[in-house]
Length: 153
Image 1 (cartoon, rainbow, N blue to C red):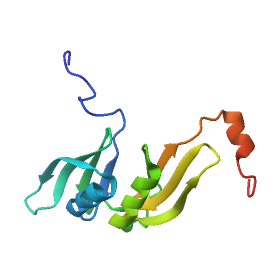
Image 2: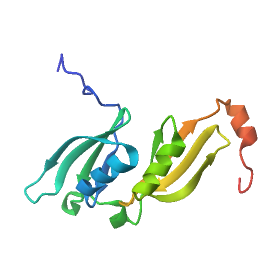
Image 3: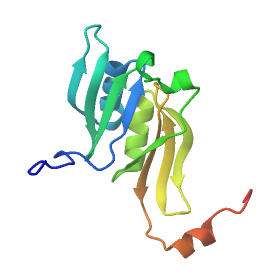
């Protein structure tokens, strides 16, 4: 395998791969909500997407339509998703507002957080969870712990 880069050019070590009931519609949503750029799509004979890729900022995200026979199930089929995809941007408020206008549901309103980020959480129309943030303060671990709420801890 000499001469072959094990991580292909343009990819990160970790790349989210989302299973979506309606992957083509999700691409349209991600373009509107997050400014995604469509990189590729590969439809099967029935028109459902076997593989697609988008870029949000400097990161790729892979998508596939649901194929339960192959174990590919959407968050809705599983009763929700325990995973949140985190996006750091220059202006969290602007991207958060854009995503809500595109149809995302607010699960945590954007606000200044004790760990030094402007941060909010959303759920997209396909059941995937997203958090959006901008770093507004650089804090030490000790400062974060001192600021952390103590209720329920």
